[in-house]
Image (cartoon, rainbow, N blue to C red; front, side, top):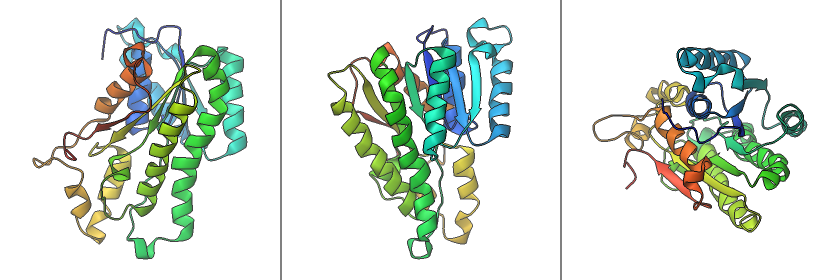
Length: 262
């Protein structure tokens, strides 16, 4: 992992912690000394994250699994998000970092995208991000903490069959920049990462469906050599943005896509 200890005595909430970039971020922050509360709807996935944390800690006290607590919670549920943040403050006593990685992807031709499907994606990706930010901000104002959101290259570039997903991530893009300016003078930094072409379980699952349409989506995501990035590559950028190394960055949406959208 890394010998850096940029998050000693810091408390972080990471949503989407059961797999993919969220899971990789949990492991990265643990390795750097953070107390991490991993959040997801999948209790099974959270257990796998805890298992990976224990495996990573063997012979490495920096990645102590005792610093990880997991909470099953839907970020789209307002009362659950309120209870989540209140519970973190009660048990950990503070909050320094919020990483909003919870998200869902539903690839579908726009003409066959139902309103329910469109709304379900916005509920998790955009409204869930908003709810977590809103509830965490009072605590982050006290610690002059930071937020890192999950945008996507789909918010700025044409990705076929992603009308709902791209719209939700465009909202996250705008929300990130709005909050960055709104809380700049109070010392809370708000940034986002915009992954593209990262091989996560969510992307892989959609890839299996692409044969039903065509493979043009993956031409917008993978490098010309067909290589996809690893979740750990994005987690490293998130850790930088959330640490003092990113102290002079706010309102940024950092593209992590292997150069595909240059």
